[in-house]
Image (tube, rainbow over all chains, first blue to last red; front, side):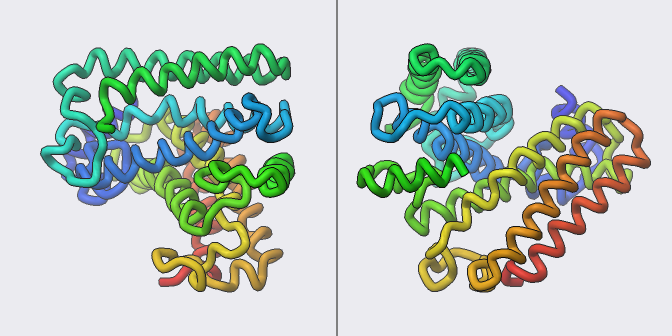
Length: 154
Length: 154
C-alpha cells in the first residue's frame, strides 16, 4: 500500500526516474525485468531445497532455512512486477498471460497462497525436521504450479 | 559455506539441473542472470529510498524499512552470482570486470562493506528518523559506488 502511495506521488510529480526501475508505476519492460528477476531469485533458492528433498544432494537444514527466507521475501514482492499495462499486448518477452489482468482477484489469491505457504516453509525450516520440510516444500511448490498453470504461458 | 557444500555435492553427483539455476557451480550464463537479477531487485528497492531522501517523493518510514530489507537480503546473496569462470572471457552480456576474480579478496571486502552498511540501513530505518536514514542511505550508496568503480565496466 505504501508502495502504491509512492507510485501515485511519483506519477503526480512526474518523476521520470521513478518509471525507470522502481515499484512505482514502472515502464512495462522494467516491470517485466523486475518480475523475471524476482522469479530467477526464487528459482535459484527453491531448486536446491527440491534437490535435497529428492535426496539428490545431502540435506542441510541451515541451507534450507536460508533458501526458504529468500523464497518468502520474493513471494511478497513478486506481485509488484505485474502492474497494469505490462502484459503480452505491451511487451514481447513475457510469459505472463492476459488473464492476470482480466482476472486480477484470482491472480492475487494465487499470489497470496504462495506467500502463505512460503512463510510456513520458513517456519518449518527453522525446526529442521526433514519430513516436515518435505511436506511443506511440496505445498509451496503446488502454489507455484497452480499459478503457472492458470497465468503463465507454457 | 553451506551453499558451497551443496555445490560441491552437486558437482560430485553430476546433477545436471543444479547447474541450471542454483547457487551451486552454475553455468556462467546462469550466474550472470542471477547476479543481474539480484541487482535489479536492489535497484528497484534502493531508488525509491533515494527519491525520498532527495525530497522528490514524500518520506514514508514504513516503505523505507521494507525496501531496506530487500536491499539487505540481496546484499547477502549477490556474491553467489560471481562464481569463477563467469567473467567477460566466458560470457558476453556482463559488465563484470576480470579484476573481480584476479582480486577476489578485495571484491569480497567491497561486498562485505555493502552488506554491513545495508544491514545498518535496516536498523536505522526501523527508528524512522529521516535524518539518520539519509545519512545511512548515503553510506550504503557509497559502498555501491566503491565496488562499481573498481569492478564494473562503465
